[in-house]
Amino acid sequence: MVNFDYDELVNTTGRFSPTRMVGKGSHGMVYKAMLLNKTVALKKPLQHRDNYSKLENEICVLSSLPENRHVISLLGTSQDHSNGNNKLIVMEFMPNGSLHDLLHVATTPPSWPKRVEIAIQVARAVQFLHEGKPTVIHRDIKSENILFDSDWNAKLADFGLAVLFDSPSQVSQPAAGTIGYLDPCYITPSKLSTKSDMFSFGVVLLEIISCRKVIDVSKSPASIVDWAVALIEEERIDEICDARIGFPVYMSSTIRHILYVAASCVSSNVENRLTIGEIVREMENSVIERVRLPIWINMLRNLVLMRRKKKLAKKWQQEKCATVLEQSDDGVHVPSGKLLLWQVLADAEME
Ligand SMILES: Nc1ncnc2c1ncn2[C@@H]1O[C@H](COP(=O)(O)OP(=O)(O)OP(=O)(O)O)[C@@H](O)[C@H]1O
Image (cartoon, rainbow, N blue to C red; front, side, top):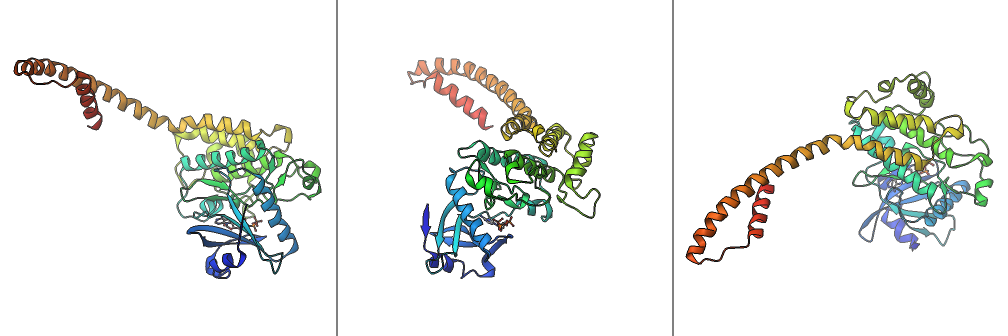
C-alpha cells in the first residue's frame, strides 16, 4: 500500500479548506485533492479516539480486499509523523454523490432501469464481501455509503465499521450500524453474521424502489420496513413504487421480484433471509425482462437487414453474370466474387 507524504497531501486540500470538503459523516470528513494529476478523496477522522480506531479499521479491511469494481478503491494512506493520530485515507474520488442524494435530494428521480442497475451493482458489492476470502461483514450498508463514480456506477464505501468474519475483532466489537438499516436480530456481537448485512441491503432495496426515507416520523408506520412489508404481503406493489415517475408495466415483474427479495432480507426470522449469492443470480435472471424491448427491436432489424442482403445479393448475381460476360469479352480482370459479395453486404449494412 502506498504511503503518501502527509504535508504534501494536506497542502493539496488547501490545509483542509472547507471549500475542498465533499462530505462529512459522524466519524470523518472527506476532502477532494489532486495527487499526481489525479483527483482523489482524502478521509480525515474527526478528533476522537473512537474515530481514529475506525479509520485504522477501515484501512485494515480495505487493504485486505482485492480490487472490485463495486467497492471503493483504497489508493493509500498517510501519517503525520509529528502526531501519530493524524492519519488520512486516500481513496478514489466519487464525483457523483451518494445514492441517498440521488433518491432524496436530486430533483430528477432516477429511471426504473437505473434503479434496477444500482440494485444489482450493490448486490454484487455485497456478494464480493460475503463470498470473498476473507469474508467481510460491512455492518453499515446504507444509501449514504453507496457512491457513484464518473460513469454513475455504484460503489460501496465507508468500511469504518466493517469486520473480517471470524476474526477476534468480530467477537470483541459491540453491535453497531445505523438506525433504520440495523438488523433488529443483531443485538450482541455473537449474533453478527452476513445475514445482518442482508437486512440492511433489503432496506436499501426498499429505499431504491420507493424513495421513502428509511425512518419517516411524519408517516405511519414510520419505518420503511413495517410500511413496505405490509404492502408486499397484500400484493399492493404499485403503492410502494416511487410515484414521481410512471410505473413501467414492462418492468413490473422485475420490480415485484426486487420487492420480494427485499422482503426476504428484512424478515425477522434470520433463517428466511436469502444469501447474497442466491439474490445476485435471481436478480441477474430477472433483468432479462428489462432488455426485452431492445432485443425485439434488434431481431426485427436483423430480419429486415437479412432480407435486404438477400435481395441485393440476388441483384448482384444477375449483374455480375452480365458484367463477367462483358468484361471477359474485353479481357478485363474481374475481382473475386467473394470480395464483391462482401462489398454488397457491407453496403446493405450501412444503409
Ligand atoms: N471516495 C469519496 N469520494 C467522494 N465523496 C466521498 C468519498 N467518500 C466519502 N465521501 C463523502 O463523504 C461522506 C462521509 O464519508 P463516510 O461515510 O466515509 O464518513 P463516516 O464519518 O464514516 O460516515 P458515517 O457517519 O456513515 O460513519 C459520504 O457520505 C460522501 O458524501
